[in-house]
Length: 255
Image (cartoon, rainbow, N blue to C red; front, side, top):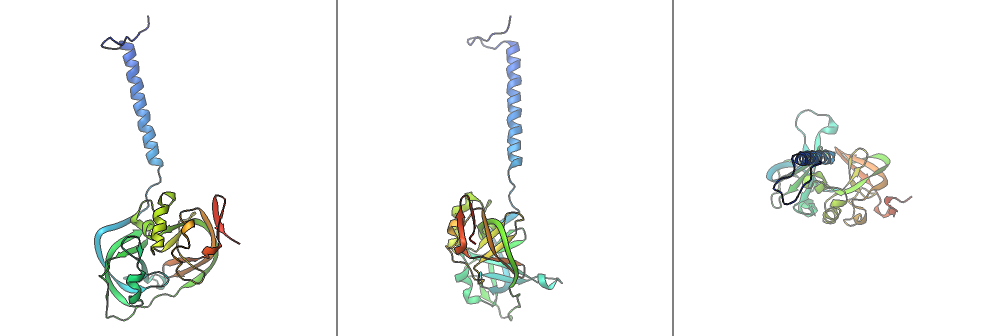
């Protein structure tokens, strides 16, 4: 005669109790395995950081075109093409550093700020009021050179969040934040889909783009035609935002 559980009895029959224990243990192990697979299957965070609350002192020459950067001499003996680093400069919050840095254009300065970095790319969130001009002469810096036409697939992001302030700093989940950052003057970056190369976006004449010229194309899969340019270690992509068009589920440059 098979075991039969009666609700008002204090215990289930021995055979049924053993079976239920095995089922419960099996379900627990299955849940643990599924959770582990979900965790390992998630895309890892980028190797990036924002040194929030940790102030550092930086010295270098201010370049304000097309976007504010601090040109810093690298120590030691390095190749001429690697003699300088360029740190993008931004203000606190969702604001660019144009107003802070314009009067220091071309001048050597000392300033304080918080470091933001990702994959070898560096940015400094400048502390307003900490910028002082130095008496040293102006430093040399590279001129921009054109590297030719390209067609690249990728995504437009705001440089501040992408380089380390937010994780993730790209994709649909970050679209609203990126739009507000770029409209506040944070330089826009184009991230190539296949190799992750980052390009600061410019207009065809090599100037900074209008703050709202890319609004409807931010955080979308996009293919653009443009011209690559380089100054020191920094790469730029010159595009005409007026040529961008939505085409079904994708966006591409108009021909």
